[in-house]
Image (cartoon, rainbow, N blue to C red):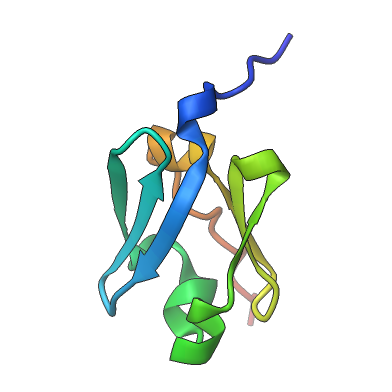
Length: 89
């Protein structure tokens, strides 16, 4: 059985700097995470980073240009993006 995030964990706004992803939640708090945890966002252009939409009924963020999806639940848990397997030589 899964639990749904609380209504106040919905995304209100998103901002990115060269170092930090900040997500404002509807009830007031802001989650700030190192952008290095999300390589697709780190490597994206400023325009691609600004092109985000609220997804998942308000509980997620989608960046269509870089195919990145994050949830408030994952952000609140402090979950970085999964590491990609390294190429074998």
